[in-house]
Length: 317
Image (cartoon, rainbow, N blue to C red; front, side, top):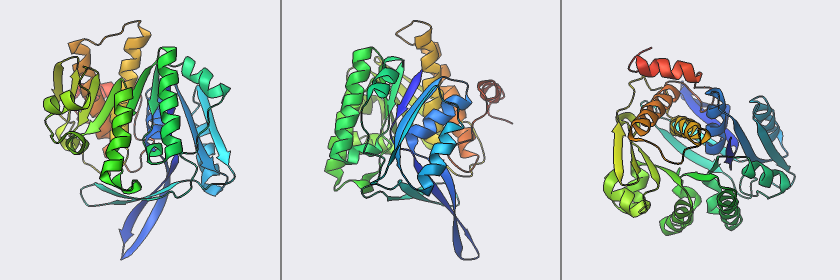
């Protein structure tokens, strides 16, 4: 099982018509998106998060229950509201986020016996990054990573940089670097790699970001992706699609990658071959492309078999 831990929130995606911007409500939050996409692919997955005891939180809890996760624990916080993310999308499908999350529920996570048990049953524990903006969230993330390592699970972390929720760039770098150091599997965009290491060259950046040969994925949007693993470097071109909105495309990419990595772990192996790594990148690129071709972060991915068919056709549908 892959266990995803962290933010679940409402993405309010804006569309301008006749000078008026209307916002559609969608379930979101990077680790929750990843969890939903893994389930869509047919994987075993769990999710742990927290929402406010409000209308948006109720919508998210109902939505999560409908996903039929192997494990689900979304607490209701009576003292905090559910986090909102307003998403404005330009003509090329690129996004601009505005977060409403002062004293909100997403980072007020608490450990309990159910979560410890879920961690112990997971092959991969995937940690969301939004909680890192708060001291309480950083402490929780570190404990989750420590518990995962203690149980023998791999730790996955997507940087998913949101500088506007930190007091400064330096504060953001300190928080993210600590999480990257504790993770076995890391995902960054090319822009994030450059922000943290000073270079967008995956080989140079990998030696600075994850210098001990752990697995690093780097996404380049419409240009594809690359990976660094145990001193070897891989790349794969993007699948050509008509982009509608890129919200959730990176999460879909990572869901595809983690889904295939989990199959390697379930086979009892601890390393990934060169052939498997190239397949993982190609499959993950297809997942990201399919997500970009639809609006909203969840519900974009078909089954594993359908993604494979998309790959075999070279991205043509």
